[in-house]
Length: 160
Image 1 (cartoon, helix red, strand yellow):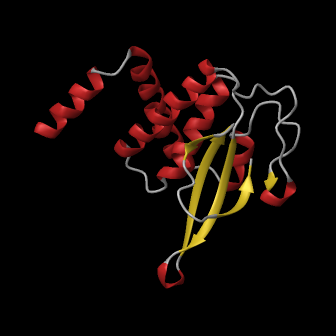
Image 2: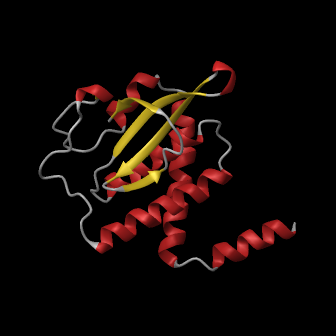
């Protein structure tokens, strides 16, 4: 009970913008989590691609490019938005019940960035864990910032 009160107090101490991004991320993560249970995985690159992408999504070796006119974050305002989106998706990932939190968080953050016309690169990769077990992971990068961190020695298989 005390932990819930602490969480609520921390939430109330957030700025209006941070609360707005938190709710946007939470709604998107719930929607995407449910969507992933009903659509084929192969549809994900088409549904969540960057707008006006000059190159079709493909394997990491295909060299997916961001078009010349794509607004990459250059100024401090976009940099701040990217940081706030990263924080919001990390906070909401902790309260969502999905197993594949990295994929859901990456897709939700991609939607949030796309809404603000900021291009990003969503990567899907794998790594070997102890005992030869293969672990899959998704991470999202916008410019030089990791929105959903790679967080390990993952081999990138797909970028869109």
